[in-house]
Structures are given as C-alpha cells and as structure tokens.
Image 1: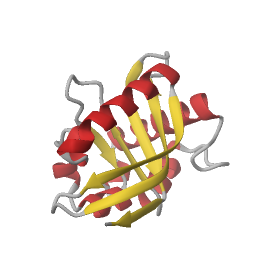
Image 2: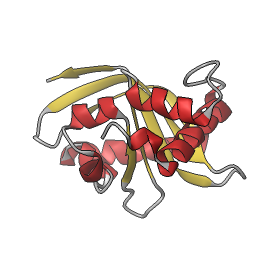
Image 3: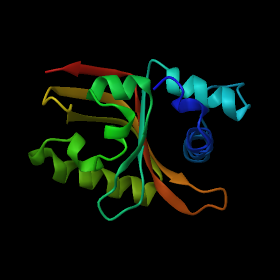
Length: 154
C-alpha cells in the first residue's frame, strides 16, 4: 500500500484532484507543491481524508488516501472496487444522491456534513467536508471528490 502514490494512475489522479479543487474553490491542496510525484505522496500520506469516484452510472470509488483507507477499513484493491453509494447507509443514500447532484450543478460545496459507514459497519459523522467535481485537463467532467479532516464515530 505504501507505494500506491508512486503509480502513474495515482500521480495523474492527484494532479486532477488538485487542479479541479483549485478550479472550483481557488484553494490548493498543498500550497507550494508543484512536482506531481511530491504532490501524490503528500496527498496520499496526508492526515486529512480525500476520496473520489468516477462517472459510471453507479460510480465506483477510484481513489482514497491512506487516511481514507484506514477510516473505511479497506485495502486499496477493496476500496477501488466499491460503489461510492455503499459508503453511506441505505437510508442516507437519497440524501447523498441529492448532494452529488448539487455538486454537479454548482461545481463544489463546502461545509458538507453526513453519516458514512465503514466496511465493518462502523458509523461515523463527517463534517466541514468539501465536495467538488473533477475535470480533465480540457474541462470535461471525470468524477467527484471529497475532502475532510473532521469525523467522529457514532
């Protein structure tokens, strides 16, 4: 798992995460870090959570940093095969779908809070999350991401 950030996918995807975050919010994930490999390592090893999914009809998680993998209790392989909707309990999935629709329309939201569930069924509340749309270099939608550093088990 420690070498995930060195893969071509992780490096390119981290650049996409950072580029899209800056596009929508004006913020940088790691100010002053412009080297893609260094950025990939810093994002993967960060203490905050960052996750993303693709644009499939039932979006599949395609990235989670080390902190996210630990929080959800999954390996990289498990995480990146999981439908994003399964990170929320069934009753909360409609709320999550509405959130993602707002992000699709506006580009991002700040200060999102919600309940999520780990692989083992442990529930936790996230708060003050930023959720944003991911864009390719030429501006086409390629997924959505979330970043947060506040959660509590419930």
